Length: 278
Image 1 (cartoon, rainbow, N blue to C red):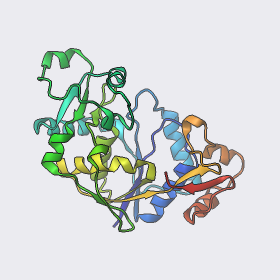
Image 2 (cartoon, rainbow, N blue to C red):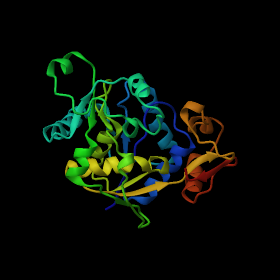
Image 3 (tube, rainbow, N blue to C red):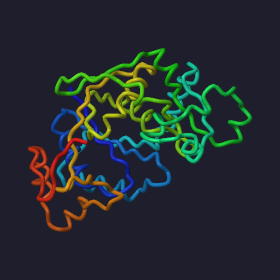
């Protein structure tokens, strides 16, 4: 039985792009779950969790089990991190974002691929770790030497190879959060028996580091369905920070949620929107 999940962050109201991803996941899997990714203490809000539930109910999308809430699973992520520590595959990083930016001549990409390795190889200093805020980073060279570069397969059968440049020394636990997206994602997918990861193609670059973590932690390998994104007619992406029209606003305007979900399932979008690959 195929299991997929919808995993929004409660940092704002859902928009049409979220609805499209949720509909695709619901249609693709016999068992469909909701995961609340609320590990960002500065942005996650309880009212947005309520909004997610309201929007899914309006669309007629019912998860097949109680939501998994990441903030309730901090100890599980800590155990996974301890496993990697015991294997010598992570190291503490004391750098600030400003430190990293200052050390790069042309910073680009995510914080893992751009990180210059300032703290890699430092002797372990327990007193410093006890007194100084720090993150934990993957020692990508050691991890790749241990597990290789595992690829993955998309739902349409396309095989993808991993790129070490997309992995880098990715952060696995932050100073202000108990786990990074990468670590929590693979741990939770395994715990929920997710074998089909349905998400936007903008998250495909996250897959190499997540596949590496799956191998290092002995977790199952899912199949992936990275779908096109819903964008404005002029190509602009929908984003919470850009105040993209929300599902709540569409509901207030009298849109029928069930009819919208049925249309999205066939790739039909409201006027002024289209699908595009990033």
